Image (cartoon, rainbow, N blue to C red; front, side, top):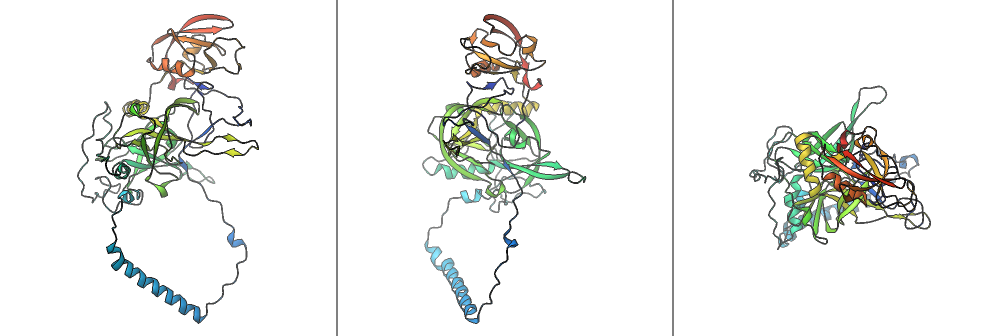
Length: 479
């Protein structure tokens, strides 16, 4: 039973031990937070930026005071002020400024994404009107092959003795793109018209136009456009999506693009510097660069019915940053920005308590294999048996004194689990002799297998243990 990731924000619970699944939805009851008030323990926002119609202003509904005519005296004063400003501007431009060191970080050029690259800092390609780029830059180096899908570029040269964040902004920003999604809407029986619906971020992973982003950025869209740093726009094809990991791959008709380099997220250390690049709040702030540290690794988060591990960072991540790169101090992508927390709970008076600096990125060790499969086949074969499950700490399914394990909360109709006679309330104790005391342990064991493999599952039911053999299936084809 697959859940779609919509662009809308949603509230979820952060506890794999409390609630998770083998990639299917799990119904949950109300919980009480740390402050004793009913409500979510933790809430997250998947950060695509939705366009919306601003509410009307009512300023003109009220009578305005009649403007008074300016007297001749005030006209003369105004003229003198304007003349003084003009003379001051000339003095500043030709006398004062030459005496000041005007060397500014070139990061400012990279913040012009979406407005056209007038300095030639964009990729050496033709834009979508067929006009060649006039930058005169050499074609970027051939990408390093990181997989059979031939993704990833050469690592940028970052001088650690200088200001590495400025260099990262200069050299990585050309790989970052804006992703605009639209839906077809019919109003008053007229022909369907395309309406811009949301805005997110992506980054270039191959010279021939493949782009990585989040699934929730493009989910439900009828058309997608990609905007490069030089302002050129391309229609994009959605090559494939994976709701479980919240990843998507797009393709535009372009060559010679500047390609992001991938790093090893498993080598990250808590406390090291990371930089996020993206488009918070839409195209007006395209190319925004924020920096922070790795706050934690392997944070287990459940959102929209799916559970996986994330990198936690305090680099600012906001709606619109979704799908953008999180890079290390070497300028290599080590994560894909996806979530932020915005609600910690409620105080004793029921007032929401906000949070700051808690964002999450999908590590590249998780993302790269999925991206490669999406590029090669357009889909991801995901092993599973077709159940929703949890650790039943509240004894909602099993009586007190039941053995430790993972409780089946739902069985998908027609799934391998149903064929093997698994039932709601069963406690899975082991898979192939390996204890499954947590949902994560169960899913980790299943991920070691391929579709078609047979696994032996030890189950506790009504005070008795028994074993059954289950053939692993493809979760994308269940329910």
